[in-house]
Amino acid sequence: MTTAGAALSPVLEAWLGRRSRFHHDWLNNRFRPFLHARRAALEECEIFGTALEDSLAEQLREWEAHFAEGAALVAEAGEALSPAQQVDCELFAGVGEPLRAWMRETVAALHRDRSNLAQLVAAAEAALREADRLYREVSARVLAPTGSRGGVPAVPALIEAVRQLSRAISALPHEIELA
Image (cartoon, rainbow, N blue to C red; front, top):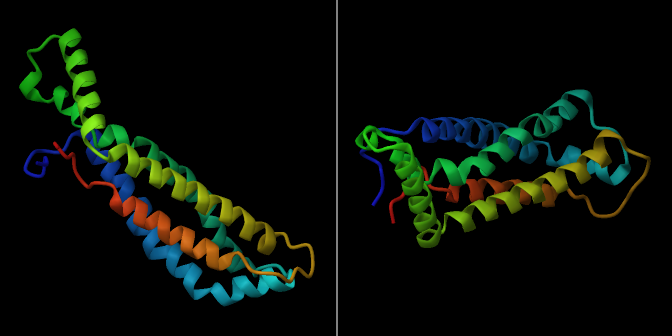
């Protein structure tokens, strides 16, 4: 059962907006295509220890500007997708706050125990950390090179990590699931 037919809570609505901006608008429609289109240039800079041209460096640095948004998206997923927030809807307006607080805690605990949301959030957090780690490795090599490097470029691993991050975010529900 889901809340597909119900009005969205403000928390869920804000989270879905953040998800759309980060995941769809930026990650999948800008950053991933950039990495794929400029893979050869990025790998060449890694291998030869040369600096990436300014316009490409700006596009690569977009990760830094969007990382906090992605981290907030993942961190807020558990709360935004929990049915506990439904306790604050009009239906329970006449219930006193102490009882509503207890209901929120109980619903949240039951949801944690009966859903796989915590695992999905943990997978998204791990994917975000791995993509960030690889971004930092690639950016150190192409934004502030130290001369000839040789070796295996990290760009393919970054591309895969960003793909995995996209998959992990896609796996998060789009609505509150009442399991």
